[in-house]
Length: 316
Image (tube, rainbow, N blue to C red; front, side, top):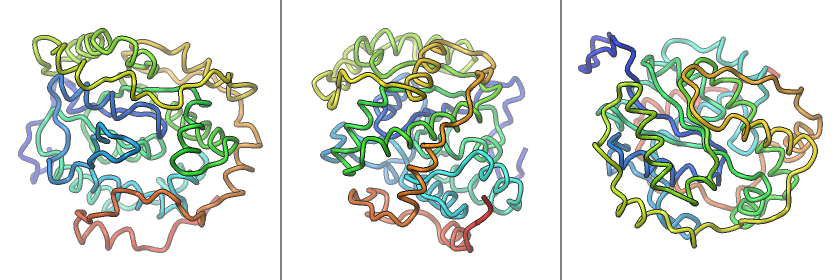
């Protein structure tokens, strides 16, 4: 146990917290709040990212940890809209020193002082292996996926992203997530399942977490769940099906629905060449039309800021 960490080690392997994982605009905010209603705490109130016109119910994530994730990506020479390849990610992480890991761990503890916790940031699809190392405690994952065509419509509306580019971004995010989740206790579900029957979804999550020994509330608060999940707020639901490699990856995700006590990474075809072409075509210098809410009010420590001002990793 870290001498500076007052929390006892999870000697029985009980997870310290829940990572809600999914691409931007996939419904991870809704999932995180529903998990929170079951007992795990979100970050400290002063650090909580509040809602906007694009997400009126709130993002339910930490401003400071968004900044840390952005710093991790910048250190690789990347951004949330220009994620690295798996090879770049592996080479970058192999070159990290212990200080980077310790700073991230300390930053997490500052805003999530209590266990069990629930945390989500879509960027963690990309940085998952780093956080599994930094947290240094057993964690459980809940993966939420959504139709890539729905996500593309949402990103076009919010960020004016081209749909083909959004599909490439979705492909990269979801592949990186699956590749880094090996051996995690994992529950996989579609966003439609949450909206269709949020009470049943919450009950399934409660059973999943309770089965792992995590403390959860005795039952699902149906009133609170129904008050939070409003199907009318489900924007950009469409009927255009995914095609080609995008459809194949979406079908692979759907085939994973359910609970995985120790996740086995499915066999995936090599990433389609057009994914890299689309991402590189935009690159890290794209002017983000949607201002990141995390930049509105800085809360991360000076130590974190100083660490991520290093020259970016450039290996490809």
